[in-house]
Length: 386
View 1: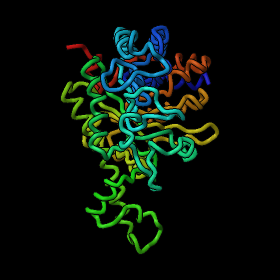
View 2: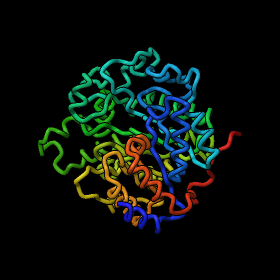
View 3: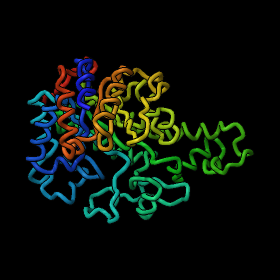
View 4: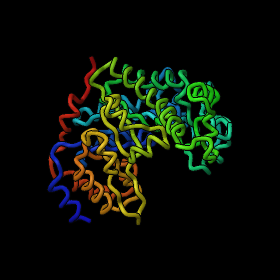
């Protein structure tokens, strides 16, 4: 493992993104944040994607969303985002505020705060093809479908306004270097079948979209209507990304907008409504971070060539799931991302590395082999308060 990592370091680009995804449970005290920034500096990380909105709650001073109910000190006496920015910028490390968008709750019990969006606006949630709202469906039913929790509907103007306001609030209050959007998608093909969506699609194309899944050839013989449905639902998500991007750039054009995405661009668009190739090519995001995770014991596959053929690889950062990989596998994926000419790499997650000190030590050796400058595409960086 050591040889592989050192050998890879010898050819590592001097200018690249070296990112860490930081889950919110690593932001719950000043001591944890000091440890985070010191660790990031030790492995020559230059970008922190810091999860400050996890499940509809805010790990910062917000007038829109409640603070995390299990940590009463946040944000009353302790502001995690402000502290990360202050410490990281002193070490030349960027901070991108990572916001979970459509996914807002995943606990069996309801949120305690009356201000939480699930309590305030239960009518804003996606509806399944079975006509059951995600706000009302038993959580176990969703989990049994491999769905993480309860999702807001991007088709609703009220939802798009709410989520855009969250990003706006962060950019206006904090000198962040970027806004990083996660869970900005559907959980799968069986969502979102809200009555407004069905009515509008029927008005445009003359058919209830639920009929397209009946399997009858007479319904959609050449699958053209199914393609229109795929594009229709993807456009709702794209519209949300566009609104957030325009808002953020209207406040500060130097704040980068990015998204964590499924690595297969075609499957991302069709199954999840996440048309990230379109987002990149039209410039509504500055870059994407592909969640190119793979399980131990399965062959590693590079980001699909057709996905990279559809976009500029210099707009793609390769995400690596170190939480389930050996150091050898991490090294293999890092090398593959370099071969493909990506903008850099992002490791998921900081917490996983801290739980596995041996792997973390090897990665320190790996990252210490050269400079840790960001690529020209990332400048200007280290935002300053105006």
